[in-house]
Image (cartoon, rainbow, N blue to C red; front, side, top):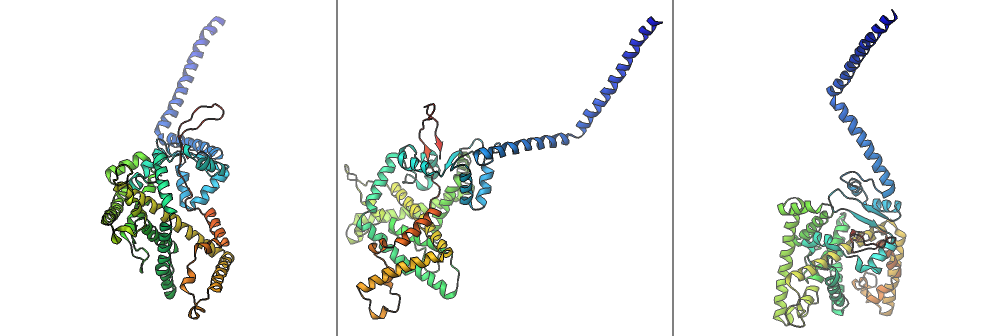
Length: 452
């Protein structure tokens, strides 16, 4: 009996186990079938899990690197969001949170990777102590070459030194400084004050930034090319050369936030902002080369009408001759590049500085009152030394509005206010540099190039 029971029970147990296994298989098959019936559930759960992981990882990187860094696109989304508001305040906040320096990681397979710093020690190191080790570099030159050519803004090493030396000598010449002063006085008295006066008479609002931009553009063109484009004439007309220059500058700036391979492809196809750049460059070149041709003809003609009385930058460089051959020292292309670079340097910097300065004065009337008091004292001192005619005693003599260099030097409070405005709102808040070579302090090994 016992043997029989022992013989029967294993069979029963095996049958039971087989039944249980079959049931388990059916349940498992049901689960798999259910999962296969709702594949979107798996996809959604996977995407949610990956998104949570990426978000946590990016937020952790924000604490360590200053900005969230996302897969493939890097820190570009954060940059684009920051550009939508007050860009410089946002960037200042990011830099402050990282002690003045952080590394920006751009999208994958792009060259938008750089070190951003506002630390005064780093700036002194790059711009003074080790200036030669921080050139603008090939990336910057390639990006701006279509607009600026081989001018000083994109030049490095010997080309930069040669242009800087030549320009510095001319900028400090008596003739050039006289041209600068006379052209500015003419523009302010004959045009700027008239535009502002006409607007005041009819009660119209004035876009001061646009008016100042027109003022500086006319002034810098007169200094660079010896030509008055007339941007500040009554009615504030649109000048083709000024419009082409503005469009070319904006399109060139877009290249810095566009992967190099992308904007080069757009240039080859002639689409997007590259199409705008090509069209605007044609306008810039047409104006520049026409003026260069006319100036060369004047210089070759000699005499009073042969450019002899001119002291603008183009005439000065056109007259330069090679010491060995006696031929022209610079090609038409190089003359074009020199003048275009000079216009870019003088146009935006001065107008932006003045716009911020007057905006700050509007916010700080006490400072404005002190500046006017300082100017009144200088005018009073001038009148006491050489009394004005009786007709002008109660009026604003036009000569009172023109100050001599020695009088300007006495305007210490005005100088301090301008300096503070430039400190708070610099005309050129960003400067691009590449690291030629660096040595790791610990290992003493050479590192790769890095953009700053």
